[in-house]
Image 1 (cartoon, rainbow, N blue to C red):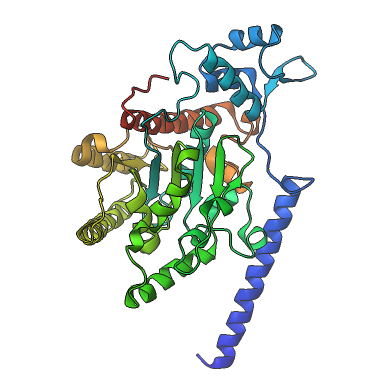
Image 2 (image 1 turned 45 degrees about the horizontal axis):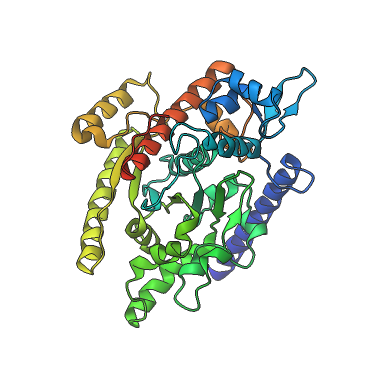
Length: 397
């Protein structure tokens, strides 16, 4: 290929990148006017009651007695609760709860911050979908959550209303806090989101700099124990969060290994197709080899738990069912009971850069929405149970 042809291709790629970024920005301004900032939808009284674990009639009683936040009322006198209202109700209900943690289930004295790494090095495994729904579910259920996008493709970031090309022109990713020259305090890069209890460290292509810097730093003997850098950064805000959810890159590079070194729990996403399972076999072998090398360097690579998450699962697909049965036979209870079902509701929500927790039920057929929501809730409940067990408690809510 001659130089002129190469230059032309570069020009086309650059133009296409700019056009796409502009269209995505225009879409955001159209979807989230007037300031192009996302807002969390309001919840019906029934949805609010379910999130809180109480009866709708009890919420009505609190409203009539003038206790707690004032919900919005529709023309038909139906109560609508914001996510902020629900959090305020949690605080109110916790004061009169029968036992500590009924409504605020996060850390207590002596509990360690939980750091969950969600990983797989094959694209399309549902890694970002799993991470985003888990982070939002935990926040809506009263946990203080920090979501970290460690994937340079930044899909987790886009789902939470930040467009890297426009909103992160001068950094603002975790790279700023883990770089080898003059790292910033991690608190400088944490952003509030439109969901109470959920903060964000966004990602963009700048994260790749860590992959390039680390070999040079190792050669110069300036990297130190590079795999501790994510953990050391997170320890700066240890008292501020109950759970950290890290959406890891789809590769086994220095970022992923540093995140794995920081993690207390690991979720490996699996799409139950034969090619994906074959890819996962290589992923597990390479991960084990790299973890051995890191452990030999002095790192504690033990984790409180590791689980496999079945994603994009179609119960009516016979070949998928055979693979699921195969995985459960091999790995037993290491495979979470609840799979994430393949659903048009989840994929359609993604078209507008939203999770299923952000869209209205009325946007889908009731059966499609309810089926997908039940799947996500069951999966996230199971992960919350692992968190609670790590803290020495049972999870019965």
